[in-house]
Image (cartoon, rainbow, N blue to C red):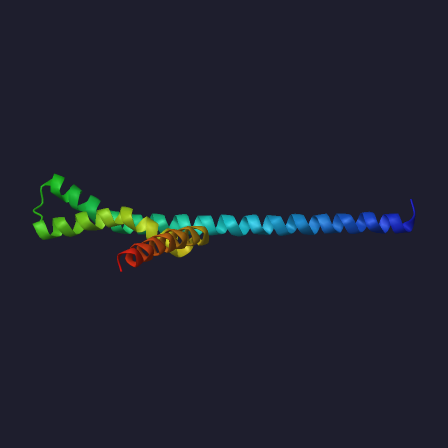
Amino acid sequence: MTSVDTFHIAEDSVCEQGVRVFWRHRQLIRRHRATRTTMVILATFVLLYFPYMLSRLLRVIGLPFSSLMWLVTSSLGIAGFAVNAFIYAIVNHEFQRAFRRILLCRVAALNSVAAEHS
């Protein structure tokens, strides 16, 4: 083995290590994004669902609860489930692309229907 061969072997291993570090970094970034998305969804759900659960607990204990407060806490509880789609739309780029494709297809379909009736 010559010094040139040794240089190529060393160069290849450095390249492979660089690629491994690059892919490892990308994996960490993806995991960080997934963790952040999950934490935002969880925090939002807890904040919106907690008043609903608290109102149910107060009702079981026997404390009086107004019907307006009952309606507000129930609405917040339901909103806790509905808000997930909006969080994904804001945070996840793949979800954004899919959402745009769906909207563009529907807009194109509506435009073609409107053009037929004109």
